[in-house]
Length: 177
Ligand code: S3P
Image 1: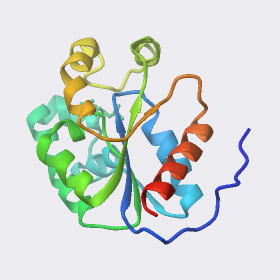
Image 2: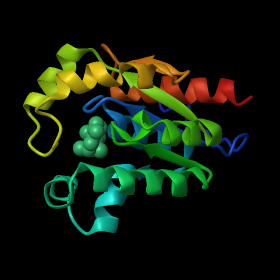
Image 3: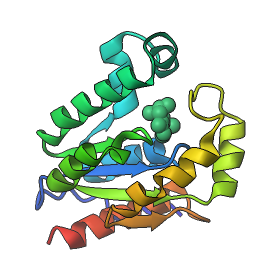
């Protein structure tokens, strides 16, 4: 049950809380809940990239190509790593880039959401707006090592977004003590 018991403002740490993980692992939903628990500003990187480009992520891929999207992603990562007190949900590929991952790890508490492939498959089957959803299995295998290089992981299986948010806030609080 959603207790809200952790909704106590805490300014003991100003480092960003960064939620990453594969497509459809719930990053945005969980990130929003964490922002509300910690009374911080929430930033979804895909939303900012789409705003900056004046078009949807699918349109960026279609009209400008993946390399252009990755360049925008890296630029935004540098901008956000220079800020404080944010809760950030990244696009699934953002921290696969070594430089971006190192930057976020240096400047924030980074959590990788681990979601089993069966769940990803079911969620992506319902998605229409993810340009890389078609070949997700190859991507999932290819990215394993990059995600594994993130020290903090949370298993999402059988947990509600609220439970995940509470677990991550608790881990962040004990890590930043
Ligand atoms: C991508 C994931 C997407 C989005 C873009 C590329 C990826 O975000 O950034 O389509 O490379 O994994 P979500 O993880 O929120 O779907």
